[in-house]
Length: 450
Image 1 (tube, helix red, strand yellow):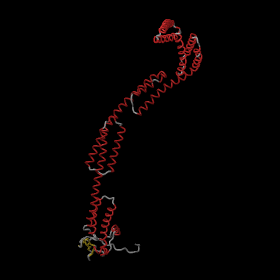
Image 2 (image 1 turned 90 degrees about the vertical axis):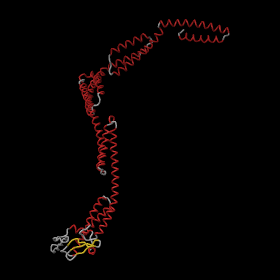
Image 3 (image 1 turned 120 degrees about the vertical axis):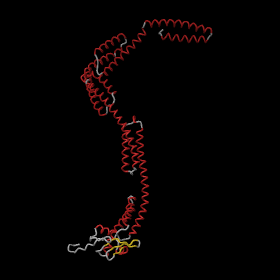
Image 4 (image 1 turned 180 degrees about the vertical axis):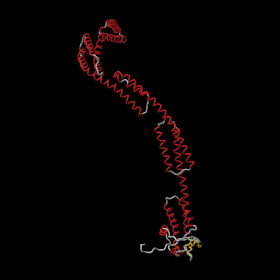
């Protein structure tokens, strides 16, 4: 409308019969709804009529019913106003039918809205096929009733499933609580129980709502199982803390004693090794405390071993000429094996041994042991030769050998006579036995050098 055009008169607002109302323009919402599901003027005339005094009536089931008055407007305006009222209700019914067909909305909620619309369409101050709307709503309510029953059955199944799932969580928690908690890995048990609790919360937030009695009963069982495990876990860690404290105190004292050995240098190493044995037997003090205390304890030992390393390096440097001297003696000692005269070989070795001892200790110890082993091999070779010579030249051994030689010679002479006599007598068996015995005695004599 332009600014120069005269404005149209505002139509009066209808009122129920006998109640005059001031003139008022229709609201924009009612105008907008009329465009959505409007009814033609001929349809309005079929279901409504207007009397000369502006009273508007609607026909329901063949009976005319007064719905209001529209005294200051034309009959067309009166019917249009009450038709828009009907269109508003019809639009709601149509929307409800579409929501039901589309699915997704709860049938029970739609059923409540349908019941409300039935009440709104009953004795409504509107012009249109109100009976038809109520029939549609009745059919919709019947359909929603079936859907509601299905939803209730599905909801019951979901609730039963949720109860079963939470019962599984409860039974797993109770199984943990009933196990021998003195032998479990608490980190693993705590993680498992935490996963059960997280799953419980997820089911509670995302699953169907359980009845208060069932929910409380399951939660009580789950809570009690957790309480048992938590109590045992706290007791375990309390005892562990006590044990850690004892070990921590013991290791702290060992660290102080180890650090006090520093002024002793190399001489403190045996005492430090004893402290190390005590450290291993003192138990765990907790990772953080153990690492800190061990760092100090090891640093004290490193200082002692560093002093020994310095001493060993100095001793090794001093031992270089000693090593050369002993290696020269070993070269000289090779003549011991080549000397055929055992007495002269012994004298040579004795002189070398005396010079060997005068050289003194050699470092590192491994080098000293290697040199000693070489000299010892020469000593053992000479000793073996001396043992053989002693056995060969021992007077007692010679006397026993001579006596045995005489006995063997006598036995041989006697056996030779027996062989001759047996041959002469033709006794082959006796001759063979005497000959075998004779051969054995001759072999013994040969072994004695006879």
